[in-house]
Image (cartoon, rainbow, N blue to C red):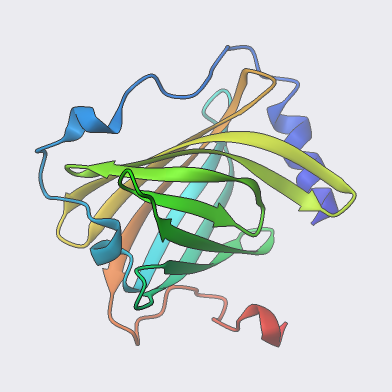
Length: 196
């Protein structure tokens, strides 16, 4: 993991040339677009995802398959339990989504040190947050500008722009698909964190 993190940083950061920041586009601009993307409906049950990580120049530097197990409790709090099988290792993340009084959700994850807000309108979801990547005592904080768009029934396209110190350092592109509970998302096996 440490070697992966260092190689990711060595590829992304020295080559970063373009200034970037959080998106200036509001999720409300997509209000009325269809098919509607409702987080509680799409992220309910099993979701498979497949994607790539690209550096600042657009070159692919990693690829992955992922599984998301999503559920909601009686208070409307959602849990997204994510497993990512990268070509160079496995990673985990658990998001907790709590209803926000002004709409959308408060969102926090195991490697997201500050709460963010998930907003949604029409066919889109947006979040901007800091991802703390690496192992305790040896981490890097990356700013993530995360957009999801529903393009067909059960299919969402996700694009996340990554920046550090205001510089554009890379991008994550993935496709998410709602699947049956017995579908296989992870070709390398689906053992959870507790089993490893």
